[in-house]
Length: 102
Image 1 (cartoon, rainbow, N blue to C red):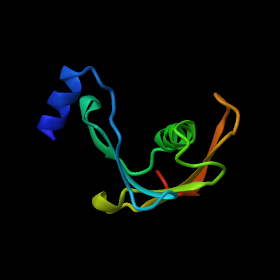
Image 2: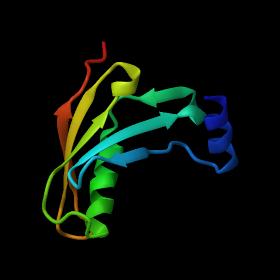
Image 3: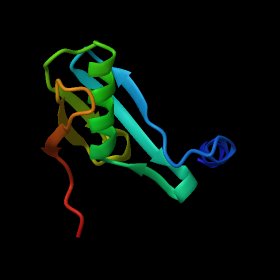
């Protein structure tokens, strides 16, 4: 993870998203925050909202909900569902199944 933190410092990045499309509606994501000392977040709702809005903006999706699988690689599998507004700059809604934080 040292290389990730170094890359993030060099480019002045707070976090990054690594996303692989399984289909046009199912994505696998990893969201390291190495610059802040957190190796990875198992469920990132803000990143899922940004992803669905970006996919809609690029017209990769139209009016569908996407599924984001995250946290599997770190042993904390989480499932997020995101849908973006059809209005540019509108809201995105994220729901799902994540781990409880005590």
